[in-house]
Image 1 (cartoon, rainbow, N blue to C red):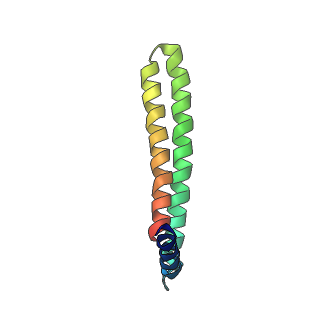
Image 2: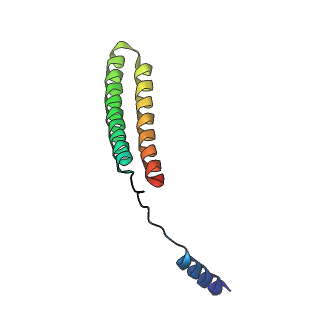
Length: 93
C-alpha cells in the first residue's frame, strides 16, 4: 500500500508543471525604474543606519541613549522591510 502511494505521488510530481518566469514585453523601462528605486532605498537605508549609529554614540555622551537606540531600531526595521520588499517584488515581477 505504501509503495503504491509513493509511486502515485512520484508520478503526480512528474506531471506538475514548473513554469519559468518571463518578463512581459515592453516593460524594460519599468524594470529599470524599479532597479533604480531599489538601489536608492538600499543606499538610504545604509545612510540611515550609519546616521542612527552616530546619533547613538552622541546620545551616549549626553545621557539620552534611548533616543539613539530608537533611531537605530527604526533604521534596522526599515532595512529589513526594504530587503523583504525586494524579495516579494522578485516573486511577482
